Image (cartoon, rainbow, N blue to C red; front, side, top):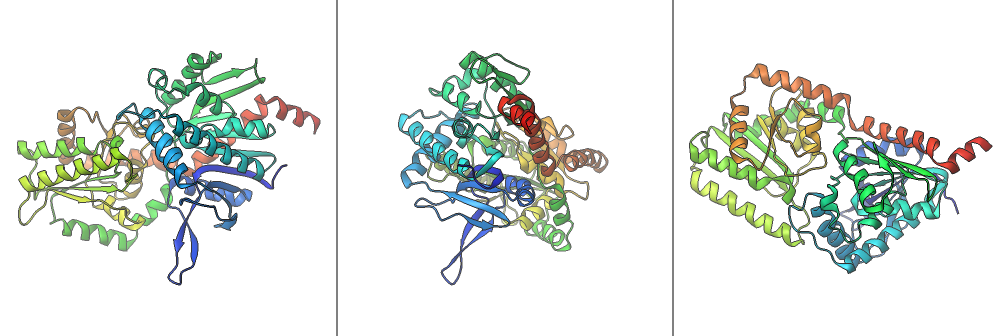
Length: 480
């Protein structure tokens, strides 16, 4: 039976976080993520529903309204959190899709949990969606949902967006359940990726894993369903205007000056802000900075590196080991090169609010984004948005999706430590005139292609493709 909502978003998490109040009660507060920022205005305008996990194991709360959006919580048991989320999603798919930086685990029990949880999400979405509604499924945790949903509700317009990379077939082929993943995604009308290369990788996987006619991002399902699926790039972005305005507030600018003073008023401040994840290249960044100190090309007191590492997946073995390696490296650098007056690396293993992040961006002369593989990397775009003063230099890994758009950044291969060192030195020595010219071009790009434009472009393309290539939709249109 059809539901009441013309737009349904399906994501691993709800757009709100549960907050424990001082009186013992609970409330819901909007999550800070970019996806929520992008979709909240659309959801409010369309009176949409959002299906997602509430973030804690156990029975889910009843559906509720928050921030003008109908929230439909999905329940996960503690075992499902371990097998579906920490296991298959983040122990199998995450490392596989990030070029096997660490070895994925292929466990049948993880896969079985992934299938079962995807079924639960699909069932909830089918119950909420009105006749002919649009359902937009988000990210790698839910790749089976489009097919499961289409079986239940062939009347729906279904989109899927993959926020992380999609690997070349030679890597993807390792997955024992590769055909099932391809089939799950092909339940959508439109599959969005961050980069054109990701869409090409998926199209090739359709040819190799399913022997389907697929070229130029068009996958034909004529023999099976009479449909055509489109795969294309829709690079995600940020709320440029909001961050630009925030960074211009007097209190944020004052905090930026205070941060530099707390660091000992160095001539240069270098900044890294990442989730503590092995894909982010944090150790490569630290190694380059350590060697620059050892070479004498950078001096403690003249330059300080601030590394914010937001806690992430702290029960997963590889993340525990990464944290230990990072902390040992920071300790070695500071033990060797710091003085009583000045510290070389300021390591902060916790998250910060929007105001403090904006102040850090303003305080930093050089932003270091050294990811080994990243679907997009929104931190690079956030740094650009915050630099209303048209100062600062972005050093950007060529293995991020952002590299396709931000051509005026200084590009690096994070595996090339000598090249990374030379680029850092170049960034520190860059003239204000050149830095300003580059930053103006970067700000035009990010400002013109903000997150609202991303959401609108995807939904518009989905509506057009569904109308043109879904036979049931075409028949309904003719009947009306």
